[in-house]
Image (cartoon, rainbow, N blue to C red; front, side, top):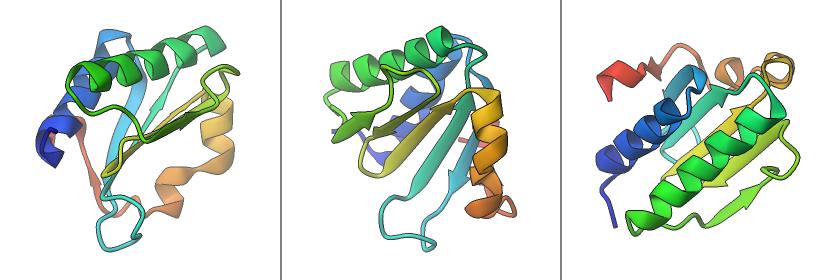
Amino acid sequence: MLELEELTKLVIESIEDVKGIDLCVLDVKGKTSVTDVMVIVSGKTSRQVRAIANSVIMDAKKAGNPPLGAEGEEYGDWALIDLGDIIVHVMQPSVRDFYNLEKLWGEDSPVSADDS
């Protein structure tokens, strides 16, 4: 099992490998008991959303951190990957704009991917 910082880095690298766009890493520790980090990223098409989700799932499994659950990757609008301490949301831009998770979870405390 990877530590939180290592797993966050793995998720970011996995997303960048398949060209995810508008990557945002939110520290939600203390805001929810469900997770410590929320990663939100967009894919331009349903195919790219599926590719990003599958990349994160496969890389996490290879690192010994299989997801606790994953939903929506077969549809390609919004995929959610639960890695325990990290929840990854992969969305098409229109879905991301509609739900605006960054605002919901407090954009006042995002951690940029470069800082992780």
